[in-house]
Image 1 (cartoon, rainbow, N blue to C red):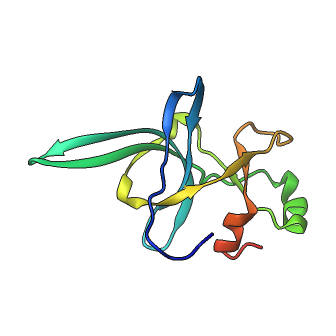
Image 2: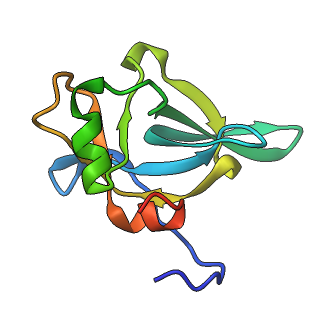
Image 3: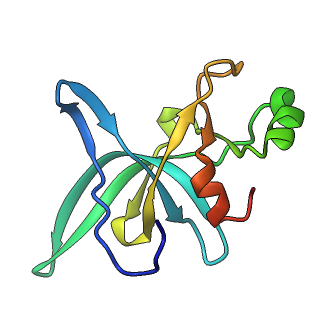
Length: 128
């Protein structure tokens, strides 16, 4: 439930979370005018001038998805996202993370890196 109160959003990037890998998805502020989905791969802290800064290695979902499912997605009010190649992961400040998100892998997609955004998130961004 969205109530606009400040809360803690526990996000995980763990290769062995209860004996299974877990790398959560997030919405990040990519620029002043753009938000994108990403997957957290690693989170760490850096001490700089006696101040600890937190950085995350993320895999952005900012590639253009395949056109194959565009009509179906539009009819069903789906938002489809596609990840960059893993070699193009990038570092971000954790402060640019807006909140956690839920992405569901599309197993029928031609490419292995296409996901559907859960409809709860679509309501937030006006997609449905």
